[in-house]
Amino acid sequence: MNKKMIVRLGVGVFAALSAGIACAALPQVSNVNVTRLTKGRVAVTYDLDSEAVVTFDVTTNGVSVGAANLVSVNGDVFKRLPAGQGYRIVWNARDDWAGKTEIGKDWDFKVVAWALTDKPDYLVVDLNAPKADCARYYPSVEWLPGGLLENPAYRTSSIVMKRVHAKGFPWVMGDTVDGGSAPTGPNHVVTLPHDYYMGVFEVTQSCWTNVCGAFAEDLKPWFSFEGDLRPVENCVSYRRLRADIDNADGDADYEYPKAPCATSWLGLLRERTDLDFDLPSEAEWEFAARAGAPMGTYNTLAPLNAGRGGSDAPGRTGSTGGGGLHDDPSTLGPDDGGTARVGTYAPSRWGLYDFHGNVAELIRDVAADGVARNACGGSWWDQGGTEQRLSRRKVYASDETNRQVGFRLMCRNGLD
Image 1: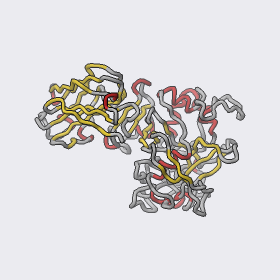
Image 2: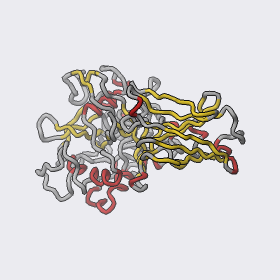
Image 3: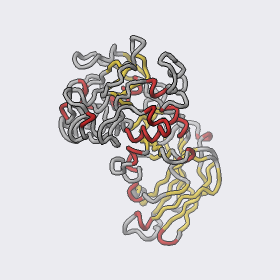
Image 4: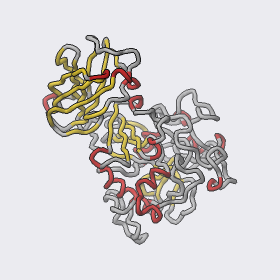
């Protein structure tokens, strides 16, 4: 089990080391120094002995001042850094922490180095930033600058990923309860060999077009009215995500575990970010969707107090505002039917949105017939029941008008 080991380096100054069993091999922070600058700003310098992800916190009397009081922190922090000396973090303490104008003796500054195989829980990828600086890491959702739902960039120009701690945890996959879509059984015990990052939101239409660039018209799927914050729809073609746009349908050069073609949507995303983005496997999807819920408890993907209507419901379906079987979402705003803006409904216990509807999500597994792909979860189209199950449906590349299907991203990003 991973832990954090905190070492006092001096009065009011801490360095924290990401620690496991073999402490000697882990990244270490040293020479942490704090300097008071003008206008209430604070500079923290440090050295790093090996490549690591670095985060930062300030505590007083042993309690963190909280992410809301550290919004102006910038410099060599919340990102992956090589070994080096003289790294610098700057915090505008006076502006961020109301009522506090002087650094007290009870202030402790913590620079935390995380091993590359044990990164923080939140990864935010800015699609408009340079490749070398596009990935930022935060220890919890509270640290995301501007707020996850309050800052629209997290659904339009950035991809927010949550670490799923799955490695070595045995669980029962599948569901043979009658009703709804085809079951995901037979039930069987699965133990995933690694952790992974899963998209907090379904991929939105604005993120899709942001990545496509010059290929936007060739790769653009069918989109709804008022689509910026709504999920990609009609993305029924696995080939559309992983294959060169000029490949014939029978060309399997893009099939997993091969890397996506460079001019596919995933290929473009990988090249832009240097991260191994892909569709999740069915096991990765289901483990994340269950959010710790045991088999047979379908409505626990959302918080315990989630109702069947309004924003505290677990997802967009025909019974929670979706248009249902009779409506064409291309003519509907998100308040009138079809899909909803991602993040409209309640998150799961693990902080992941829309597993209970909105769009069924394409995964990388091939269906039992060897031709179709599988998509998991209910959609805005379903009239109750299906969205409460970890349902599976077959999706064929020829189904170019299936408005129920979108996708969610995962990436390993070097996690053990």
